[in-house]
Length: 176
Image (cartoon, rainbow, N blue to C red):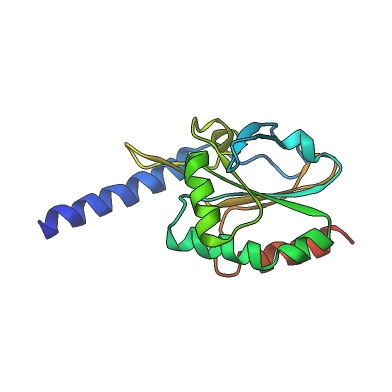
């Protein structure tokens, strides 16, 4: 049983690695951010174009209620006042449902929008989808989008423990 489990884990690691090697690239810095409309945790549609004229931190995360995703969300929530002082909106995206996001926000005290990409179109457009075989999850990627709607910074190697501070530092540099 242990041997079978280890083989499964190794196969999943190889599959994830291969999917990243052969996957396309994220929207490049300087390009227009792909437009989208997704349902928020309140069940209302949210479109990226609504935020034209504002800075946007668009972060993709794998799954509600998991440890890394909870840490990352808590850190964005902890720093929310700093983002707001800079005129920045935070939008989180995963392939979980709007109902799952609502429960996650309620349980964790989150006061920013989480968006449900249940058909994987937005995660795919941002090349932020990981295929684990029978399951697809959002990759842990973050995009800073300027008020003109252009991608100005991309994070693909994200440590949830320090990511909010890293994003705030990037914004301080970008907003000079």
